[in-house]
Image (cartoon, rainbow, N blue to C red; front, side, top):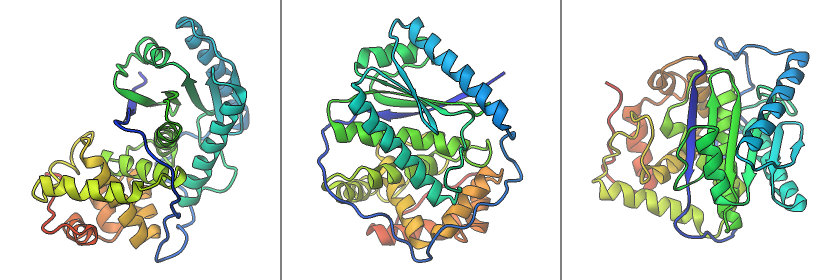
Length: 314
């Protein structure tokens, strides 16, 4: 039996504004070279990949026909992209997806041009919210109300991501990168799952970097500070919950940014350890070289919030 996990992006409460943001710089240079995982996804031959792509295309067309919303598809090196948006705009979003793929590949030292997907990632972009909701309900059996995008991660390695085109271009671009980054993390190295705080934090950090918005970095930092101060510095179940709460998203993004800025090589090693089957506290201690008891107070100091505490796994 195949299992499906999902990540979702909530529709923003207010439109964002454009600005520039530099890439995250690190103290120690580039990430470690990608090595072999002891717990990898099953290897696929070129012939198997071709057959999988054909099946994904057939299933995608059938899904759209089922909801009575047929849309043309475009196949690129890494994506199967279905949308009812104008061709020129569709090409713009495909370029952004390619940037996401290249940036996360660079971070994790995946060789340029290597396709990590099972076949290819399937992307649906609907111009109308109602069509997106209908797709999620009838095809993915998920209630998408209040969301702007959802990433479905199947246990066989398949990744399907659906969105509706939000009116604000930057809001949509952010969600497009965020949810697609979840798909990348799912397929990276092996099937072991990354904890919510690390998964959401990385997706937000990558989206913030690739979709610059005026004032966003400062706003995220302030939201993280405010959230922690509102909770008396207590991160609560941040590290143990299956899915972090809304107020914890800025905290997750800031923590990810902090970890990468301090030591990108060790951050990659931490994610690698988790994806290779280690429990995340063990990987944090052994690969990032900072157990939770040391990471949390240093993070609080960097963020400018005193007395930050967190509960770890039992």
